[in-house]
Length: 339
Ligand code: APR
Image 1 (tube, protein in one colour):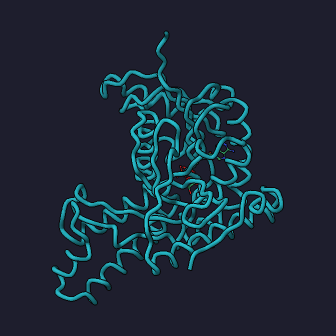
Image 2 (cartoon, protein in one colour):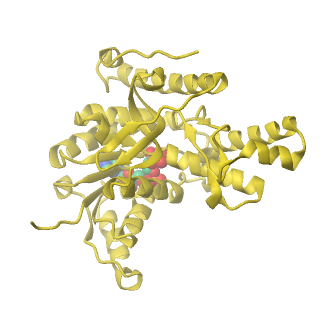
Image 3 (cartoon, helix red, strand yellow):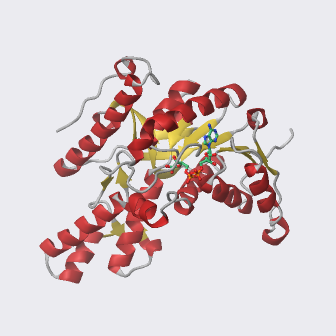
């Protein structure tokens, strides 16, 4: 039997795609092809990264292309193709322009890499994953999105800064859609097992003040993408989204069975049927291998329902705009929200 390195196709060679190519190379994750519509740009970036191989001691095949045929036989496609936000824009403002791009990308993935897994990063995330799955027709376990890993990492960063502890010891989870209604779970956030609320109460000596502090952290987490868009002025976050995608890619390519927040297709879990939403899931060689259902209290359920409602609205917009067939979600089950 001949052994074979995995083939990774990065669709979109912009800010996230470029950083991701470098990370994949440095981790020797597989052979990498980076596709972009901008002529020569992915070729230039790939060449630049490849020329650091001697220094960084990696040995993989890496090249850029403007031809979809070059992604042929890819095992894993990471989609960052699209337009990022400008200051003042929400992720949802990107819907039409990025839906057109995802449609073309999906058709080409279906044609040239029909057995691949697809991780979507383009925004608005939950809607773009939905469209990708529809266009490719791939099983839902093979099409999923990156958002929760990033949102949870942002939450963890802000908690670590507030508590004055190493971010390495923080466990934090954000559920729901990748929008300003995302749900950072306070009850499940801890520092090596110690609930963050206990530590905040100890620090501030009052539950009310601890609650104010955590509310501020939740707000900052929800707006973390916007905060960076405002600072950068000409693009959105790319280092941390690339790192988040890498964690998911390693989970799949190394069959790690990691429990990560993933934008995954729900079929009754969390009382949601027929939509892609961010939930904890086991990621391994079969992609989304299992959705993990955790108990939500009334407040969390309400926030989750409101976040899901925002995703449903975007999917309905895709139907209205003709990207998805009418009654798409009725064919797949209807939404039922608890609470
Ligand atoms: N096919 C392939 N690539 C495309 C297409 C297309 N039809 N249209 C645009 N692109 C490419 C652009 O040429 C660009 O190089 O997608 C790339 C996107 O890169 P950036 O503009 O640098 O954006 P980036 O920061 O990487 O973010 C990409 O991820 O986080 C989300 O909101 C963000 O939707 C955006 C995506």
